[in-house]
Every structure is written in C-alpha cells, then in structure tokens.
Length: 455
Image (cartoon, rainbow, N blue to C red; front, top):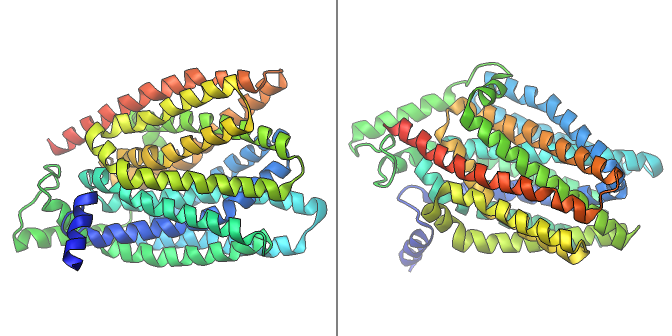
C-alpha cells in the first residue's frame, strides 16, 4: 500500500528516483520561512496603514536604505564563508532582531509606538526579501535546470502552506493575544528552518546523482551510472560545499550591469515591483476610506485576504504549476502575471472600490506565488554559482526596492497633482504590456543560455 502511494505521488508531481527526500525538506524549509513571515505580515500592514497612505512613500524609502545597508553585509559573508555557514548567520541575525522588536514593543506607547511601528514596517520589508532570496539561492544551487521545471512548483507549495498557516495563526490568535507576541513564534520557526537548511545542503550529492541519471535532463547533467562516475559527482559536490565563493561585495551588481540576461531579470523585477507598489497604495487608500480608524478590522481584512491568496495559490500549485511550466515553458509562465495585472488595472480604473481591489490583489498575488515566482527562480538555474548568490540577491533586494521607490514616489506625485484612483490605475496598463513582452524574451534567453551551456 505504501509503495502504491509513493508511485501515485511520483506520477502526480513527476518525482524521479532520489529526489523525494530533498524535495520534501525543501518544501518544509520554505514552509517554515513563509509561516514565520506571514505571522507578522498583517501586523506590518496594519502599522503601515496606521501611519497613513501619505507616509508610505517614506517608509518605502527607508526600506531601500535598509537594503543598501544589508546587501554589502550579505555579499561580504558570501565572499568569505562556506554556504552552510553564511546561510545560518543571515537567518540568525534576523531572529535576534525579531526578539529585539518584541522587547521594544513592550516598552513604548503613544507617539513612540507609532515610530517603532514604522521602523518595524521597514525592517519586515527587508526581512522578507532577504530570507526568501537566500532560500531560493540555495535551492538554485542544489537543483539542476530540468529539476527546476518539474519541482520548483512543488517546493512553492510548501511556501504557500506556510503562508496559509501563518495567516491562520495571526487571524486566530490576534483576538487572544497582543499581535506583537507572535514575533516570538516567528523567531522559533526561523531557527527550525536553519536546521533544515543544513540538512538539505547535505542532500546535494543525492540530487546531483538523480540529475545525472535523469534521461530528460540536459546533456551537461547526464552521466554514466558507473560507481566511478557517481563518485566523481559526489566529490565535485563536496568540494563545492566546502568552497568559498569569493569575490567582492559589488560583484553581483557588476554582473547584472554587464549581462543582458541578468539585466533583463532586473528589469522584470523592476516592472513587477512598480505594478505591485501601485496596487498596494491603491489598496491602502481604499481600505482606509472604508475602515477609518478600525485597526483590528484592517488587520483581520488583511489576514483574511492572505488566507484567500494562499488557498488559491495552493490549488494552482498542486494541480497546474508544474504542468504549465513544463508544457508552456518559462516565458509563458512568466507572461501570465502581466496579463492578470493588465486586466485587473483596467477593471480598477472602471470601478475603484474595495471588492475590486481585494479580488484583484488576491488573484495577482496568487498568480505571482503559483506561477511567476517559480518561473522567475528557474531563470537563475542556468547562471554561475556566484550569480546565484550575489547577482540574484542584488536583483531580489536592491532592484526590488528601487522598483518600490519608483512606484511609491511616482504614485505620490501623481496623486498630489490630482490624478484619482482610476487615472492611477490606467498608468499601469502600458507598464503591464512592456512587462509581458519582456517575460517572453527572458524565456527565450533562458533556453539560449541552457543550449550554450550544454553545447
């Protein structure tokens, strides 16, 4: 019976021999990270809304400054430490800060609490991008290109389940405890994630052997099944695990500027974040208009929205993501989200009301997590190891927040000049169209990179 169940699962999600354990722990790792984040996300959103939409642009500027401070520290660790060590350092650095924020919120009140909330909003926005970027860097380092198409969607299911759990925890417990108490639970989950990341790294040899024996894998990954060939693969992986990536703190940024492919990914990230920021600002404006000073009502709305997003994402990831990316390819997988954005902003321009903005945000975020994110991450499986950790982190953090800045301040400027919610939504239609064609181009470039690597 157990063997029948295993065969059914393998056929359903296309797991090959030797991949099951690594796939499970990758999903568990992502589950814990996103559960930790989604526990505190509604708290962050409430603190951002409490400060007013007029101050959001300044909070986004503060987030960019935080990224400017963190990225060199991170790349310095990557340059000087083995993978196992610098990943642990990054996560535990954020865990200590969670405990510090918990202590601060026990001591402040009044205006000091408002400012502490603004700092927490900025910190959470930095925290989210870094922990997820480091996770996907590790996954891209362990999984091979063909494995990414088949399995990244399954790994993303773990993240969705974690986000769903985190949202549920916050929705259920904010009526029983002070929301900031949940920061302690978030820190505990992060520590468990660190332990799993170490175990997952130890499974890299098994994944490499599975890729070498995969008849569908790229020619550069295929190998003979002889003991000598297998030992050569294991030795190569062990040497990589112990090696230090080296280089300097600005190497990732330089590679992005010099590579059309990496620069294209950066532009994809930029367009994505500009669109996301406009929608976020419009959502906050409409929610504040409806809920006024009802802080608990806003927090519960955001938490319920997150529940809907993650439930929908989970359904898509379980039944459609792997098949879409395998059948349609990376380019079309990337292109679906700008299509959703174009339609959503068109509807928002016609009817800028709470129901429209919440439904649009729910569909857009589900599309991002279920399709855009796995497809975007697979773009990095064909680049060098240095670029997987440094260039990727530069795009995921600094470029992401530059997009926030462009979106936040352009939104604020146009709103100040009198452009209403409908007009602001219309400005995102051409941005979504450019984003669509860029996604298709990147899909073609990924295939070209892969072909050149395996030639």
